Image (cartoon, rainbow, N blue to C red; front, side, top):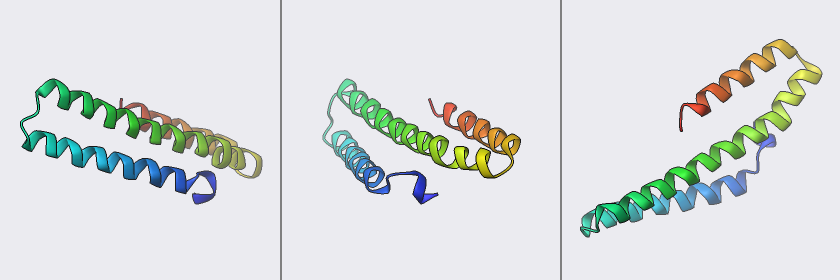
Length: 91
């Protein structure tokens, strides 16, 4: 699966998200207004969603294409549909 995604890019994004989560915890400890915390929670959520999009795109362009060309197209499409279903539940 690693060949279908830019792992360096994903790790950079995840490290940034981890920093955002840590900062949110500090904001809570510092009694920052709820509205400001919610803005940061939404930013982290959006960033994590983007990570999922990147993974899904890589899966489509590499794994799904390869599965259709060299494997069972019906099974590959069914598995991709399941992946999209799981990802869409995250919103």
